[in-house]
Length: 385
Image (tube, rainbow, N blue to C red; front, side, top):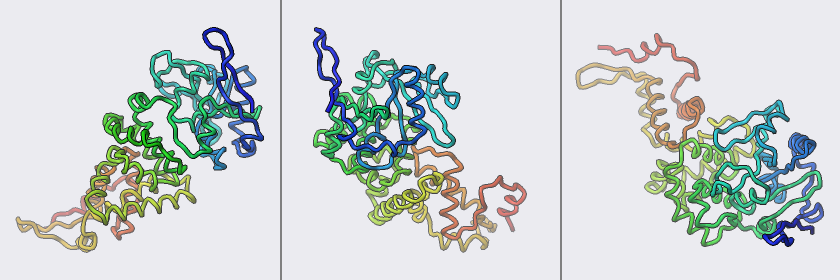
């Protein structure tokens, strides 16, 4: 085992990090995406520090296949952009670089510091500062493929081996500065089986309300990650127990609390989503939204009666008969589902796909996603005396 040292205010050497060698961490370089290695090699060739960081290191230690390889460096976003033609800078305040290799995207961030007095500022810093801005120790490990070393400043390797989720940032500060960290804690606990301490769980439960002002775009991003995971049911259940799911899916949370049958069906659907994702990870989002709206749609109306009424005229109190159209039935269902999934705000085409898929399963003859034929639409809802 090796150590990395820094100096204290008196210039004396102080142990700052533990360095785990190949025989100690047992990560196989063959499990690392070769394009990620190319990016790291390019950054190092220009004299910059560069590491794989976060969830990828955790997954490699757990012998899981990482879904993404996030990278960190001391090169600024502008400098990274000049080194890679296949890249772009995103974000207005917190600027990061995306490097593209076909359909793959590698997110490269620059070390951040505490210069702005917060763990969510955008001032650039050193690796020693960057590590103490990361949320939990299991995500605060830096892997150097060139030397095959893991650099551990916060005891993350020991916490992973012990199956514990431990905050890097003090509890009094971590969720106040970024409430979404609560969702990450729950996600990590559900997907790894790691334990949260009593104090961490209590802090999450008492801080759940901090998610209320979080933007729909950030909540959508987190919910999409859940829908794309192999642990959607476990994450949703733990989020519900922690009081967080009310802010992710308030309408579903209310129905789960009020209707036992709906709750059972909803979590059964999420279990099926887990299995679906294991074999269809790259499937479109709409195919996954199906699993969180289909039980709501089933309970939305008496579908047998609605389908029978599609071709049968109905009498109104004015003595006029109206033909019910599949298009109108679809519009009604789409509006209800749109409200049901709020504050999630997926692309309209993805929600439309999910609604149409569910309606077709119920036997409603809805058309495919094409621009409506106005002439035919008028004919479908023709009022007959």
